[in-house]
Length: 102
Image (cartoon, rainbow, N blue to C red):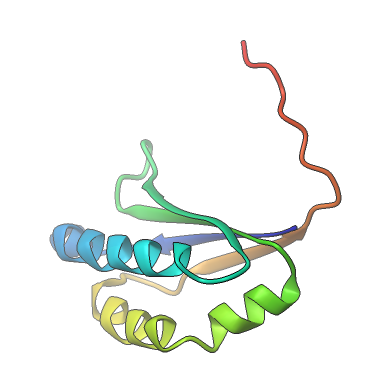
């Protein structure tokens, strides 16, 4: 499984519009073959930082997502609402184990 974690800094005056754009991106991305999950949240301590957590079956699914037309539209529409460049982190996961919480 491939996990991508993105941190997207949003301008505070753009958060409502950016939230709509991010939500549409998540809904469209979850429809793609090979996408296990795609979620967007906002950081509690930094409320203008959107966190996107993407889970893919394999690199082929990532490549398909990266060439999708809705990703291109998303990048164009979110850019005016960002206060700086996003940070992306990619992980290759060999095992997913459900752990017990506190």
